[in-house]
Image 1 (cartoon, rainbow, N blue to C red):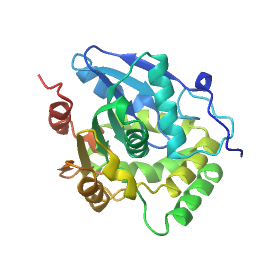
Image 2: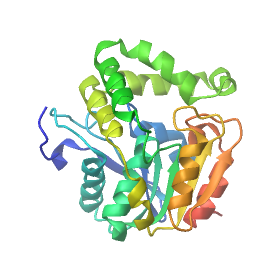
Image 3: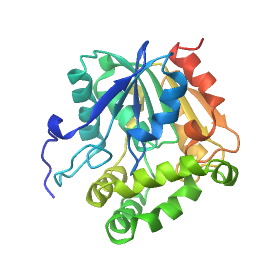
Image 4: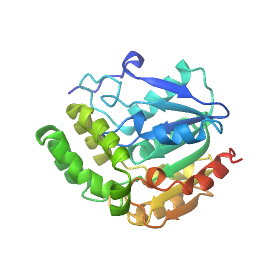
Length: 261
């Protein structure tokens, strides 16, 4: 793979709703469709701007080496095409890491920030662990990989009660380009934003599921401690997809964005 720029023509972005602009950034190996339910519920509260990262959803992938700074530039490019100067930004997992990079490099583009179930650094053995994940992304059957992910992402209760949502997430996961999945895994292995978090100027809400094992509560506590003025919201009983699984937490999110009714 080569470290070349990502063409804006390869990146899908779209918008729906009315009100203040809010960018919704998706998780690893999923796509903008993960936000469908959120957009349907709150399209009268904000204009949702969604972006598919390279090789995810409708966006193409040409074998580039990726890092979170590249993905932050993808978001900036999408905002430019949509003629949006400044927006709220909400990111989950990978999307949260990209949202931090965006806020550090382009503070003038971010109004309020919501970081959900994400990390600024996955620990001292992060490169090895994410290399292992990258190899699995290109060698294991997609549905087999999702079977493992689903139990990390959602609580047993949600898995039982929302089979339709789980089926939609599986479809997104299966259609993700394996090579792009692997490249993005390596981007997360290289991630280390801890010493730069103090540069984030946007008012920040950090959300994490109490039972998240992928990005445990401690990672969110560290982000909240380092981002000036950040507030932490722990969602009881939720796992990695707290913003999808727990609708009541959106009261705190909308209040933070200034779009609550």
